[in-house]
Each structure stands twice: as structure tokens, then as C-alpha cells.
Amino acid sequence: MRQSSPDHGLPPLPDPATPTPRRLHMITWGCQMNVYDSARMADVLAPLGYAPTPSPDEADMVILNTCHIRDRAAEKVFSELGRLRGLKAGRAAAGQRMILAVAGCVAQAEGAEILARAPFVDIVLGPQTYHRLPEMVARVARAGGAVIDTSFPAEQKFDFLPEAAAPQTAGGLTAFLTVQEGCDKFCSFCVVPYTRGAEASRPAASVLAEARRLVGSGAREITLLGQNVNAYHGDAPDGGTWGLGRLIRELAEIGGLARIRYTTSHPRDMDAELIEAHAKVPALMPFLHLPVQSGSDRILSAMNRRHTVADYLALIDQLRAARPDLALSSDFIVGHPGETAADFEATLDLVRRVGFAQAFSFKYSPRPGTPAAGAGGQVAEAEKDARLQALQALLRAQQAAFNESCTGRDLPVLFTGPGRHPGQIAGRSPYLQPVHLAGPATLIGRIAPVHITAAHTNSLTGTMHTAPMPEERACA
Ligand code: 5AD
Ligand code: SF4
Image 1 (cartoon, protein in one colour):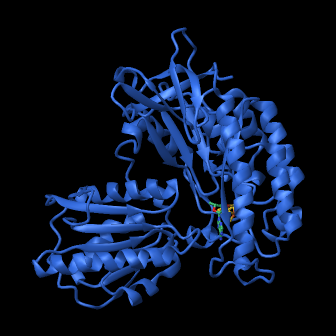
Image 2 (cartoon, rainbow, N blue to C red; image 1 turned 90 degrees about the horizontal axis):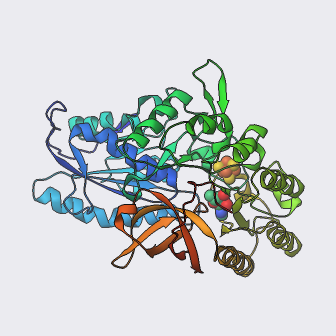
């Protein structure tokens, strides 16, 4: 940790034993892991008296939790900081303090550059040091300087973060749980190995304990998170190491936990035990996000993906053999350096062969410091645009067809809250589709069969099914 010296003239922090109530505003960009990390940062700051506030206007501390994976992430952060600067100055003029922190992957990647361009920022912290946040806040308060901590500390943040205070989403019924962080794959285009560091797994006992607590406070669905979640290899209570398949089997034993999901996976780490879990664990939902990125072996090799198209297709066959109703999602990049029209056609071909229930697709955008950024054969922007449009049209049609295929079926729905209109409730199908229907609020928190009557672009509508249906097992 290193400090610079500008005097921010801050009054001292309260004694943590008797914390003064303080307001914490967080702005979170990016993936579910960032959402989870923001919740953990709120947890570590709670003992200092910080409670969440929806607006930055009255906040005593604002944290920008940033994402660097695509697009002009740094510019978005600096423009938000520009807005907050005025707010902070206004507070200072009124004799009040506002601590401004930049966290996440942009903080990791830009480090001191953030303080150089925005000297009014108090704290810059990378994703591996959230457990040290209270100490950083104390240092800022004591010394009045700025703190940068973008190290990859030897100690695991998992061992130091407090347990999740409460399930994070949908009224606490669905929760995220980080089990793994970082990545050792070094795909040519990706910043994650640089910003999140080496692959590390959380001990299984700690995952199970957090899962039990989440279920105890009402969660019915848990999504296991990790940048490369199926590379999970956590220390096990029996002294060995568990992979994700084994971890999922153990989690499925927790009474009251009805649904388990995991994201994001790499095809190379899909081992036999995990595939078997899809066959044997009914609580493991039949929906898998398995990024492939490209359908051309030449580009997959240039991307350093370490799998071929044939590997991916064989894996899909194995997964579908294990769980015939498995629906698939994926990530695609168009216009990676060296991608020709024929390579792109091969991607369309792969999409046609697999058939995706939904997918994310992006134009390649160079990330400084990654191998692809400096590679020859960069694809013209107009060409990337055209390819993205063609790919998205195909993926949209597949998503519409998948949603349409759900009509007339009875799907178990986890009801998570009220619907848009009075008398309506909303929930999620096993395939993560939002489902809306007329029904009593008393069903919220329960899983019940819904007869699907109509499909829309991103959601389904249905009617309450009256016949009894065994929980989760009747999904066609
Ligand atoms: N350009 C475009 N898309 C990217 N992704 C990651 N890095 C880049 C990049 N430089 C996409 C990948 C990944 C998803 C999370 O973001 O498809 O799977
Ligand atoms: Fe990035 Fe995923 Fe590749 Fe890891 S496996 S480098 S997180 S795209």
C-alpha cells in the first residue's frame, strides 16, 4: 500500500466501537461478480457505521466499482468522477466530508493514473484488497492523503471478508456466492488475468457455510460465481480438493436450496464430475452459460482458447446426453484480429449447429496490455459492425424460437416478486426467463408450475397450473 500526500483536510473518523451513522453510495458496473463484490464492500464498511444510500447527494462515501472488460470503461469512470467532484466540493464547502473510492478492474488497471487525472479521489483499490477497505478508510481519515492498493496480496480476501449479510437480489430469494476468482487462461483479448490475478478458489467449508446462511435467511436459489468458475478446486473438509461438480453435489444437500446455477465457465474446465452433476443433481438448473467466443479453429487458436470447434461440439453432446433439456447460452466476439469473412461464417455455422437459448455477442475491442491489442490483422470497425449485426440477428431468432418452444409447456417457476401490474407476480423459469402471470403474492418465495401461454423477446407469460407438480423435476 502506498500513500500520496495532498492534504484533504478531513476530520477524523469515528471510533469503530461506537460508529456514527454514515451513508454509503455505490455505483457498480459490469458482471455479477462486481455486484457481489459491491455487497461485500458494503459488508466490510457496515461496522464503521456505513449504510447504503440510493443517491450520492447525501453520501459520506461513494465507491465506483468498475469494469474493464470491454468498451471505454476508463472514460466512463472519469466522466462519473467529474460529476462527483462537484458534489464533493459542495460538501467540503459545507464543512462535510465525502470519501471517494474507485474500486474494481479499472482501478486495478489504471492505478496511479486515476489519482493523476482525478486527484480528488481518496482511495483506489483493486479487486483483491476489499477486505482492507476499513483500514484504507482509516488511513485516509488519519493522514488525509490518498491511498492506492492494487496489490495481489498473499492472503486470500475470501479468508478476511465477513460473511454475506443477506441475499442480494429478488427480495433475498436469489443470491450470488463467489467461489472462485481470477483466471490463468490468458485468452488473447481478455484483461481478467491481469486485473483479477491468478485463479484462486475458496475453501469448500466456507462456501457451504455461506450457502447455509443464505438459505437460512431466505435464499431459494444460489448462483455460484467465478471468472472461471468451473476451474474451481477448493480445499475440502476431508483434506482433499473438490471440483465444482462435487461442490454442487454437497450444496444440493442443503435443505431449502431449490436451485443452483454457476457462471462463467470455460469449455476446457468442464470435467466428467461436473457433467455428471448435470445428470444427477435435479437442483442444478438446466441452463448453462458456456462461452465459445468463435466458431473458427484458426481464430480459437489465435485467441489462445485451447479448444477447437470439435471439442466444444463434443462437450455440448456430452452435456445434452447428461441433461437432455439443457438450454445453452454463450459469449461471442466478432472481429478478433485476423478474423476473415470465412472465419465469421464458421461462427454462424457453429451457432446454427448448437442452437442457443440466449447469448451475448460483442465487437472485439482492444484492451491495452493484452496480446491481441498489438496483433496484426485488426478488423475494420464497419466490418465488425456488419458481423455483429448478422450474428445478433441469428442469435435473436434462436432466442425467439427457444422462448416460443416453451409455450404450451408447464414450467416450474420460482416466484421472486410482484409483477408489473396489480394482481401479477413475476418469477424465473429454470432457463432464467422472466415469467409474468396473474397470481397471489403469497406464492412469492415458492416454486410452482406455470402453464406458459405466450413468449416474448425476453420473457414469458403464463397461467397458474392447478395440477400438482413435483418441485423442479417436471421441467420437460
Ligand atoms: N473485446 C470484446 N469482448 C470481450 N470480452 C472479453 N474481452 C473482450 C474484448 N477485449 C467478452 C468475452 C467474454 C465476455 C465476458 O466479454 O466474450 O466471454
Ligand atoms: Fe478472460 Fe474467460 Fe479467457 Fe479467463 S477464460 S482469460 S476470464 S475470457
